[in-house]
Length: 282
Image (cartoon, rainbow, N blue to C red):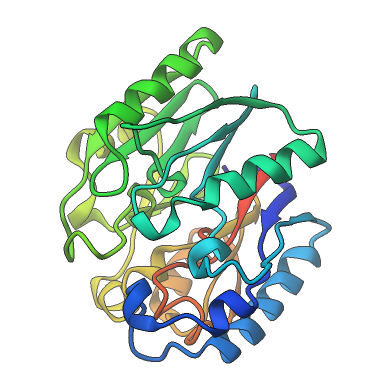
């Protein structure tokens, strides 16, 4: 999850975000569709500036405001893409967009999560090439985890499920990746108070160094100070405005780039990781 990002699926928000009603999508104070689009453009330029190829998924005015968060409707493995099934009702149409985009790009599809299973990409963390950790909570259920495990087992991949807390309630977004961001090989930023104990123990057993994000910035950012995208190992992109979190990563040897996201990420509950679906890391 931290190797050089060579290809990524993204969706440039457009009419669907401009026409979105904040109350329908659980968007908070500060949401401004027009400003969010401007901030997304700046973010996309940062991603592309590192030589990353972008596989664009079009916003055709379909009304899917959350579809800009491309991390969630699919998961990439070494053996092909897995089309997921969303736990948030308003996002159920999004996986079909990813399936169409991958098919058009010639990217193989390994399988698809079907009802009653649900899995969102934000709940999936590759611990190593043969171990996938999955958060079990409001957005991802046991049936989905079992389907994922059955899909990956023939390829020697073990899928481990971990229970998540309810957090701020069923309408809010709490994924496993809400409490951990890999930064480099065996280095991750975490919010320790909400990290599943068994997952914390696994990471420690696997030799991970865990940087504990400041609680005050976690609260002030709706958890998005923790949402950090590695472009290459130790070269990461984060939301601007959280200097203590940035300093923590820099002290650990990371290069940290920032972008303004007060209209895009903070009110919409999704950061730079959520805005990207890595397709190929070298």
